[in-house]
Image 1: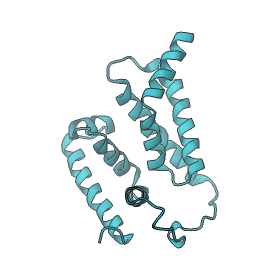
Image 2 (image 1 turned 60 degrees about the vertical axis):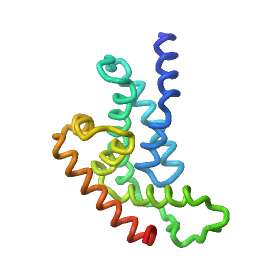
Image 3 (image 1 turned 135 degrees about the vertical axis):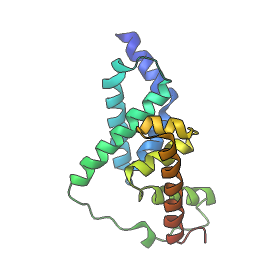
Amino acid sequence: MENKEKAFLERIERHKGILYKVSKLYMDDADDQQDLFQEIVLQLWKAYESFKGESQFSTWMYRVAINTAIVFLKKEKRKPDRYEIPSENIKADESDVDEKELQLEHFYKALRQLDKIDKAIIFYQLEGYSHREIGDNLGISEGNARVRLNRAKEKLKTIIQKQGYGL
C-alpha cells in the first residue's frame, strides 16, 4: 500500500502543472481554485486503482481533472452567489504588472466565459493535443473537435476584444 501511495504522489508532483491549469481555467477565485485542485487530487486518488497504464498517466489525469472540474463547477453554480467587486473596477498600477501577466489574466478571464466543452477543447489544444486526441478525450469525432476548436478560438478572440484588450 505504501508503494502505491508513493508512486501516486510522485506522479501527481510530476504533473501538478496540469492541475493548476485546470483549476485556474475553471474557477475565478483563488480559494475556489485551491478547492478544485484538492478535489481533483481526491478524485485522482479514488480513481487511481482504475488506471491501467493503457495511456500515459498525464492523459488519464487530464480526463479525470477536466471531468472533476465540470462536476465541481456545476456544484459551485448551485451555491448562493457571493458579492465580488469586478476586477475591471480596480485600477492596477501598470508599472507593477508585467505585460505577460496582464495578457494571461485577460486570456483566463476570457476562457472562463466559454462553456465547459469549449474550455476543455482550448485546454487540450494548448497542451499540444491533436484534433484526434481531443476528440477521443471528449468523446467527439476528430472533425467535430476541429470545428469546435475553431469556433472556440473565434469566441475567445471576440471576448478578448470586448474586454478592450488586443485592439
